[in-house]
Image (cartoon, rainbow, N blue to C red):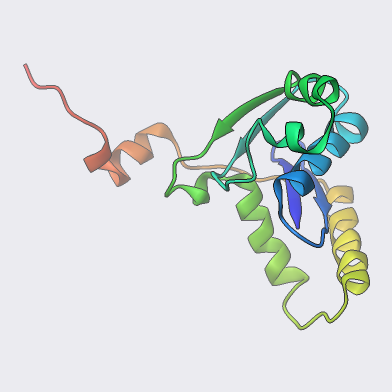
Length: 149
């Protein structure tokens, strides 16, 4: 399952796949860039080994891969910061609202997730992020060096 989230617009795009390979991720990115977002895209994502700028080169010819990669601005969340990834927040909501039972076929999973996605998008469910830089400096004090005169 791949998910892209626009937290302030209340929009998400979900795609069910058989695997989570670099090629599968590249196909999802191509779908996003050609179908959902015709302009350049800023991606904030985790550090999964398939999520890299080289993935399109494994799936497409060099010209296509370069054209797709040139439209992406990629930012990775910290290694132990998946909670910073808005898609992870949305995946948690999906799990609680839609995947809280056994679903025994890909077809049923695809149908159920598409209905959930359509309902969430029609209501424009946004993510209201409350965690600020100041909060991070308090919570993760050990990660921020202090300079004393």
